[in-house]
Length: 377
Image (cartoon, rainbow, N blue to C red; front, side):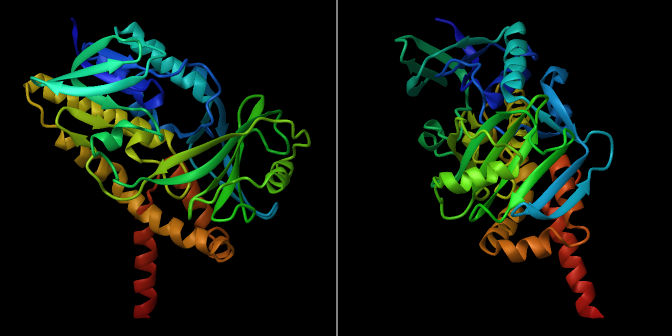
């Protein structure tokens, strides 16, 4: 039986990008995906263009809009607009296209995929992972990557990430046409969703709309309210199919690797706890996971600890501040909007977070510095 260098559980964004990074280095990789791919992905699709450095391929085919400004509103009024600096720092991508591009490229470089197949049991013997699947076939590998998304079964099995993951409840849908949304603008709507917000991101011929709540796990089941929000984006036809999803959001610094195993993307609870951004941490974690596994295979050791250190440093430090901001903002949303959005420089700062120019940590340090300066005068 062939022993793969790496087996990846999950063939979505994190799994496919990890596979591509590893297969391009010449390693044998198997992806085990439980579902058929190709369906609409319930994802807003926002991605900082700075993430190109973590993508080992050209993704122009997946880019549908390049955002020039970000709109903020409180219950469809009290508008604030922030211009994005630089050339196209924020893109809207069609997730199913991006995932397919990554997967196709990984397969081109020699990765293999089994789907649909459910992983039923994982054991370790003589430094080799033994994986039993629903197709009654057993697969073996030297290293293992957990990339099975927010509903991950295996992250908890290996005690990776938070013991008690925190979830945001979201509803996602895609509507034909652009409604009243400019083609080059993303919109955030506050005030309607308790403990959260709604968003609208334009694709080429349609709009990704989402609603998310981040505190107390409030369920978004108020159809009448949801219809009001969707109408506020300029849509009258309400015969749509909404997809409900629970997103694992960042909830503290945790170990993301074990002995010959790492967890990436949503399964690692890396989703932004304030803006629900998931693409950027998925790509960052996939890059560092592949880098760490490469170092282990090259030097013939099993120490993956630098992976957790890199992610917690690159992403976790900023998200610690993002979590604090979210806890205050969503508990006192009206005050948060007045002080956190309508403040002169605030919209620009949020836009800079989306484009990757700034982190929550950068903003927190600016606020602390301003408070200290004011206290000394």
